[in-house]
Length: 336
Length: 294
Image (cartoon, rainbow over all chains, first blue to last red; front, side, top):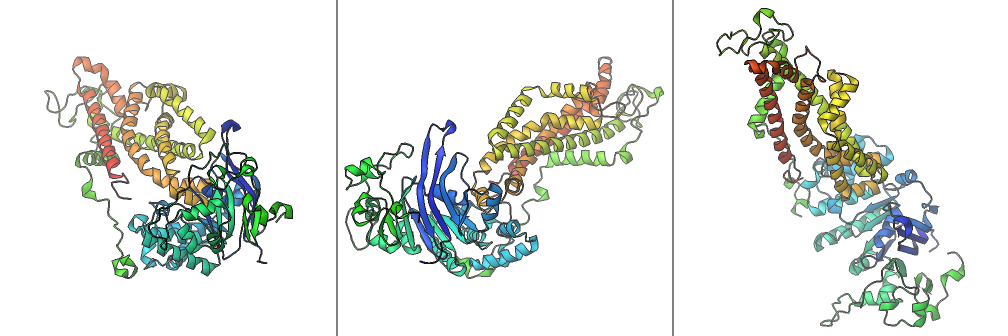
């Protein structure tokens, strides 16, 4: 706990602003998170909740219409938000690496595996073509690719899906980043390959003491992979905390509803409960809590006033009026 | 994942997806012949193409009455050997054709990549420019430029490059628009590549196939344009034996029966254009990444 965080987000907001500024979509709104080295943070939420935009914000690779409008993004205590694009280029791939949603398509069909795995090394460390190639072989070995000496010379279309995925992992760790962001890296894979890959990511994390951020909508993966969990809804983090605590005693009704909607082995033949209704249009959010319209325990105040981040327990917080009785709003304690 | 245990099961890279015998026979034969003739023109041509003898003007081809074997395709109004002029003319057509296609391709591909990848106002400017360009009739535009800079082989190349680059820019931009949304380009971005590195390393190699196919198809158009310019007197300056110049010189003779002066160079132009178009069509299929399973 006393260790300073590797990555800390303070009240980060990213908005999509339409041309002329008439429509503003608060894709990421007032998000605060922190992650220590060697820790895994799972960010879950349904489609459109802002998970991917949050990941892109951390890399500062947002599409032209999106802008970080507020907040800080601290990597080892250094704020990345005011950095120029040029400065960011030396951080991307070197200190923060990212694995994309579809690693199968993440390789350039025209270059050999060796060239592509070695590219970040040449880019960030000025490695020569030959030494980058040598290190690429080592990296392929690290991601358990058999006979890497042959494989480096081959092209992506000669690899199986699982192999290509591990190669993308190798590119991710090539410059020994401090932080690895994986944005739904397993959605395009079948279950056995998925399991292998998740294990590989865990191993790599342990070997390199990586901070790992895992973005997914699969709570099963979160349970297996993550130490910390952040639940996102309509651009906001509605609940954070250690995975087991959140799973066992969800503080926010949304988290509770999410957990009820996954099948369990122990409760056979029970209908799965879906969450009624749709998430709100992020460009016209209600004045109160964004979940109020779908929340079974919403009361008047929820619809009038958006709840602030409140502590539930040490290391746990939620944005819900229901926890107010037991908690003190974080904001009143001064800047965290 | 059987390969994880058996290193011997690693497939070897097929290095020969390009085989000589796959080449289409007709266009290859024509192109190889023309290139051969152009390269060895000095040894192949029976006479000096620029020197004639006024005593042997308007000799017909050898198979017609009055024709002689020393001038198999006859002679022109200055008594110059038509065959020799055709042989040296191949050199002009090829040199001008290839360099002009290269110049147009280099400008167009660069503009297309920059326009497509950067997008925004850069894209707007480049695309409106190509719109304007394409609205102008190519030949009239070329004549206009030629009239300004004056006739010479070098100028022709520059003019043709300036007139035809927009076609590459259009095609390449379209490809870039779809390429830049591909996951590997995104990966390059998050790996910290600069825009220019991405354009050079990840975009350019992926559009080069299309550019090559377009270049082969453009070769025919460029050769015809060069011949037209020469025919109109704003192209390769005489006495250099360009096919277009020969057509132009021969046109007065057409009404009095000197058909070989126009038909011979015309036929050569037709063959070369046909060959380059056939080659382009074949390459288009051959280089299609889907057919090559990339």
